[in-house]
Length: 103
Image (cartoon, rainbow, N blue to C red; front, side, top):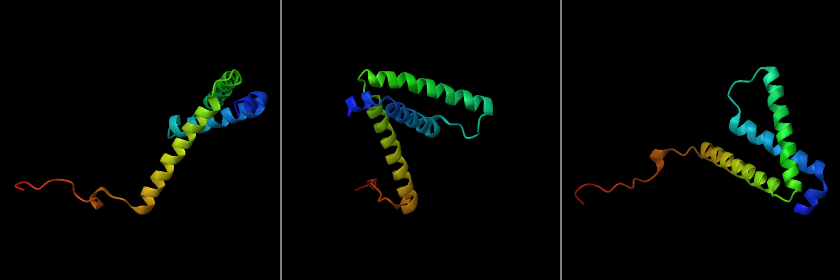
């Protein structure tokens, strides 16, 4: 897989760019939107940084695989949050683990 990704540089760049934008939006994005100029600047820097990471990917470092695992873990966390919300799990539903005094 690493060799195929090294041979197909455009695919590698687009995967890295997509992973980077997803991670930025899920982890570092503020609640409010940035002004348009700052937004363009942020994405231009992400595009440049993705190019640097693509060069490292072509040099046989597993950048895409590592970013893929990070995104997979983020999706697993989101799935767990949705599952907990769907089940309505509350801390008071769990059985008590405290020992009663005097026993």
